[in-house]
Amino acid sequence: MPSQRNNGKLVLELAASLIRIPSLTPIHTELQPAAAESLDCLERFMVADGARSTRLTFEGGHARWNYPVDNLYVEWDAATPGSQHLCFMGHTDVVSPGDSKTWTADPFGGSVRNGFILGRGATDMKGAVAAFAVAAGSYAERCRARGAPCHVSMIITTDEEWAAVNGTRRVLEWMRDNGKSPSAFVVGEPSSQEIFGSAIKIGRRGSLCGTLNAQGVQGHAAYQALFENPNRALSLGLAILNAHAWTDAEPGMPATNFETIATQSGDFGATAIVPGEASALWNIRFTHHQTPDGLAAMLQRLLDAPPDWARRHPDISLLKRLELTANIDTASLPYYSPPNRLSRLAKSVLVTHCKREPELDARGGTTDGRFVHDYFPEAEIIELGLPENGGLTLSTHPEAFGRRGGMHQVDESCAIPDLQALTLCYRDLLLAYLGQVE
Image 1 (cartoon, one colour):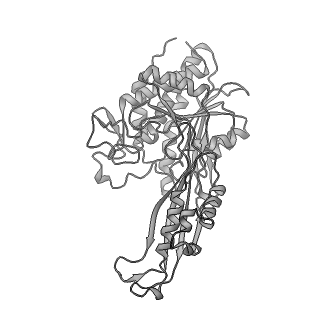
Image 2 (cartoon, rainbow, N blue to C red):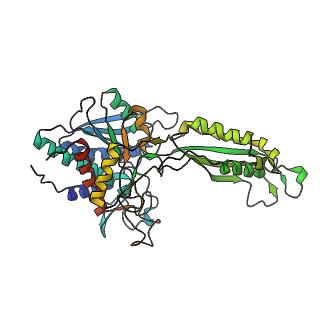
Image 3 (cartoon, rainbow, N blue to C red):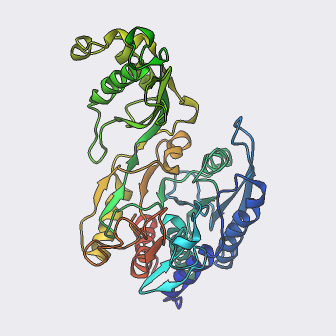
């Protein structure tokens, strides 16, 4: 029985409804109602399509980020053990829009302009959430018409943009403990930079932050006997750490790299005073071949046993003044999902709808996909969503490209044709992965 649904219209309406809810991550009590409202909106839509929903609220588990988080698990038909079961993952929490006066439209208006839908979360990732909700509902309708099972589920959290302590990870744990075992996951995070369908993510590097602190002796800059400059020790230490080259790249996944994020020392208003201490904030993006503990130990070894070029440096003796700290408890772990059936089918679907061969890569920031293999180690994972730049292209939007309209940017938006195409891609991926239902 052919579907009478207008999925293109449905996805636009649902995305706009979600964008109009100011669902910032509920790290404070006053933000919790809006976060819950975003799930209410989705729940109403999917239950009307025959889904069964479970609300899961978790809290605690972290000394600082223990705020309660509302989550939603949805499924149409419970999959039997060993059967093909596809789970979509997403979030409805968003980052702050910042100063709304810098926007050309209401950040929570969900307005449509020149073929784009504007608002915080349009790209990251209320658009994709709406797309897979509509696509799954369409697939479920086909299944009902044939009397066939619909082994589709969804995890929607309201805590992806912040600590992620009581969000997706806790829902995955609940699923495992309740016998719900997806064979594959599709994360709706933005997956291509500029052109929709140009990339599919099959992993992400992890993130580890820390500090490097140098102690010295404060003194007058003209009297070298009266000071020991901590900036010299810090500079050499950072040079050593920045110069180390990791050789752990995978196809599509860049090698581990160390970057200095910020430095702090001295007083620009006191030009003759050498400071008594200096510090730097650093970040490492690392592959699945590394661990936070191993990286911290490696950085310390580099400082304790510097390379030959550093041993010849006049400040080598000052390295003993350095103290390295790694924030292992807040590290985001990497993941890598070797290409398999799901990624092959996703590539085929994108070729059909986008007329281009997508790249499989693992670049970009961390996502909730990193939690899956802790609970379902055999499941394949891909990330397929809207373009990071919101559908703005350099050729047609040269003034705004890279400055406005992208994820986390002013005037965040998504191109309506991209949103509708993504919905079709999700629908056809369901048909290909779970079976044709005509």
